[in-house]
Length: 331
Image (cartoon, rainbow, N blue to C red; front, side, top):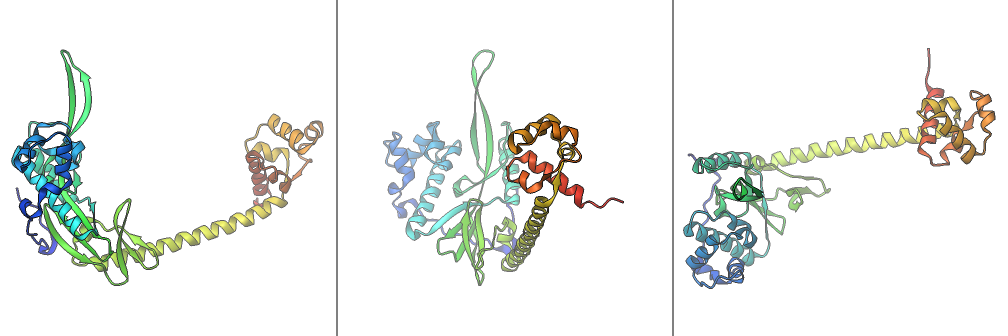
């Protein structure tokens, strides 16, 4: 199968760092394996230990796909250690997953083709670990009782490497995909990079932000696309603010009119209130006589301001109905 292509030939291979150069024994992935009971001091021994264990996902998310032998395990250990080395060296890089439709489709097709016997596939998801690209992550779905014994329901999630490396200065972002650095972006003039719960975003000086898509991150016209999206978002925010302001004005005008209207028993009934409930409310909250209201229901009126002062929602509905009756023009 062909590897996915990237716009403008922006793939720039990164020189890999060797485990010996990094002094890999100091990294967290090795410490976690040692804490779990591994006594080996070589990458091969640690890889063999991890391959035989069933709780790999608890050690590190990238170790959950170790099903293809020691070589794959050592590659994943190297990938984790390389990234940890970079993070320790610069101390200003944060990694965020990036959903990429092209990479997702490629990983789904490739992983399924290499594992035709497996079923129960989940949707592919991005991974921050370069060594997990085009691998699969088993997901324990629980056990059920079969005819003769208990069985475990397994599902499988294809993984594809797609991540954004955000420098804490907010001026640089690196796009990594398929185990390589695709491109390095500098923040356009007047903008800076930041992150929130939705991922990496572009923030303007006025606080307007936008989360670019995978295609926009790769596009040679990144700055133009982002500025147009920010401008459109500013227009949408302004329109929303104007609509809210007009709504508040209309609400104030209506409430002033509702306070001056006169509410009858018929208005309360048209608002959906039952007659008995309205009469009890008038007796207990307004101190009115039930007999007087029943005798002249269309003549006895209560000021809207008096009903609104009670704070009762049903009383407010009756006032609103009376206001509509008084302000509606009938022909």
